[in-house]
Length: 85
Image 1: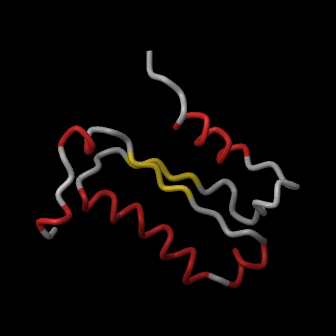
Image 2: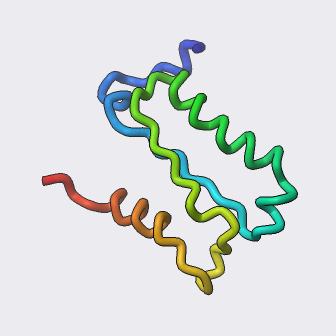
């Protein structure tokens, strides 16, 4: 890592979450390079020093139009705004 890549220990103790999706099933099937690069983000997080990395890929092939439910995205957003007790 370069000096500009330093992350403080307090940040690295948190869980990294890698969320990705592609809007249509055709994108999932045809854009294999894009999907491969998205999964590589897990290794990027580990190289940066995160020990815990959660992958959320349940929404692959689901549009963000609002017409299709994306339960894992909704759970992720709800977790970002929850106040720890």
